[in-house]
Image (tube, rainbow, N blue to C red; front, side, top):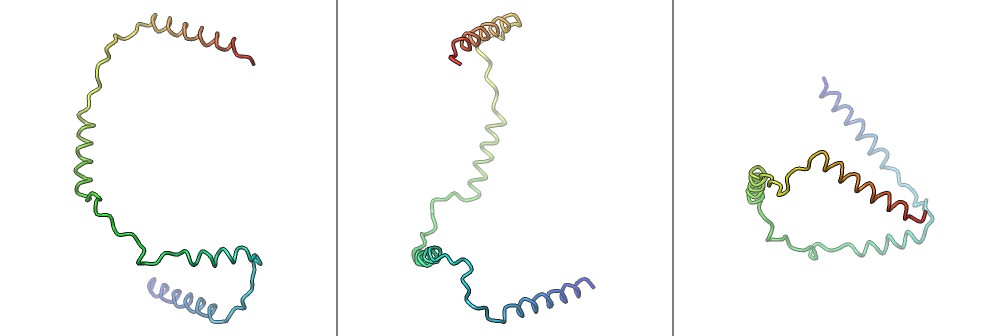
Length: 115
């Protein structure tokens, strides 16, 4: 039943489209822009010919090679270990001291601002 409805609707739509395309429409310039018309006419000559199309590049890697390289990169990523820091971690007091020093520098910079 569904396929019958699809066939009927396709016939109706194709009849309507062909019926609308049958009458000849007069050549009416809706835009009335001669500059636009000249641009379109000039661009029609700039379309390249099929003989001017560049050849297909031969130095492109094949899909199998891309896959192999992707697997290698994934293996490198999975085997990566984060290097240990050369500096011991800071204590809470050292972090607070450094924070206060940076805050003092920021305040000095703000006081020096001409605004």
